Image (cartoon, rainbow, N blue to C red; front, side):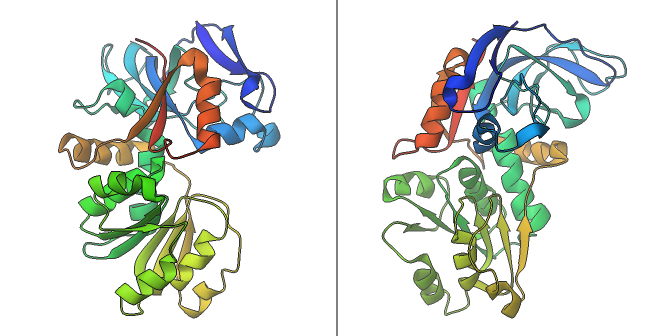
Length: 318
């Protein structure tokens, strides 16, 4: 079968199209024909060698899957051949979805939302699951609370806005002015241009000096540290990135800081499926590339720009 493989670490040019053996499902496993995957920041980090020797080469990247069950192994109970499914792949797996077929343990797999195409569904597992884990599993977001989401036009951020709104929260978000219409269309109540405005001053002024209940950071640098100033006493802060800056403000205000890694994905994807099928969440797909152009997809994500928002999808089949 066809796969895009890396045999070394570096820039997008390390991808090479290769023929690899089609996998066979073992006990409790299913074989999935991959229709689409996506590019996450973690893909780029793995390709660049950020995770070092934990990634065994040659490796197939791509950590989202939307596809169709082609075969089932022994003891599989929840899926049948022909089921349309979606799921995230463990980062250190080394056998990702930039290929025509993937084998997964059924425990991580969920049936795909019926109202999404495979292209749309491939945007959900990692980004949507991470947003869910951040807001509910870690921050314990409650109805009526105020949340600040940094990077609202990105993959995780665009899901976080919609999840928070579905939970009954008031949502502040930061992004470039060129993405204002997008984030407003998916539910943001108050949008702040991070390049031209001071989000701390705006939030403290508009909340009577109290700040937000929850701040969720999807971008790096010292944004988390700054956000603590705009977070309430006894508030919660969550991040999916590394951090810089002074976090001591959390001590005086008794703010709990959480670092999030997606685990136990199935219940999160089941919950997201419910909201998606109720049309309370709509994936934001920014760009689509064919499998043989996965290098270009990585390049676009890393370059960023005014036309890069939501998720970048890699179309594998069809």
